[in-house]
Image (tube, rainbow, N blue to C red; front, side, top):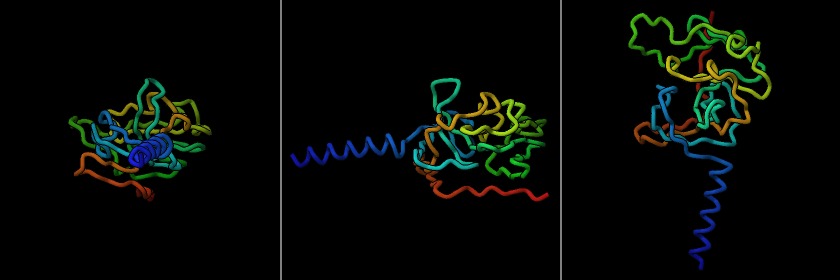
Amino acid sequence: MSWLVAILFGIVISFICREFLFSPIVVKGASMVPTYENKDVIIVSKISEIDRFDHIVFKSPVEDEYYIKRVIGLPGDTVEMKEDILIVNGIEYEEPYVNRETDNPFQRRVTENFTLEDYTGEKTVPEGYLFVLGDNRLTSFDSRHYGLISIDAVLGESKMRIYPFNHFTLNWGKEEVEVKSN
């Protein structure tokens, strides 16, 4: 009887953790290369506070799938891309995580010039929404295509890559992103 109680207790704790605290997710596709590869297994924290440059998993606004992308714009932010330079609220940011490799020798930029208003019709990210981009900008299906993401659609933030084992990483701290000096 004590074994049965221990097993049931373990099942209940596992269910609670997976439902409310964290969940494993398998990455599909190449939109986040080089940060995540196809078939990487990550652990998503459902209780994290979302910040700029976090990797989030959210329910797609266009299909019944979950996507992983990088948060670029938070509520109240202005976002633009000019000559492959990200500008948020008038501040230029280096993006060392962006995949700049291409087979096309004539490809000068990996991200086209745009403003938030070009894609969303909004001058700033509205309250309750996020603007997201993939790290593999040439192949990513992101806010440039389907607009802003409702914060309610966010499952959580990627905190750990657990597979493949040789690429195990922890994302508990905030990623360093450099501000460009003019």
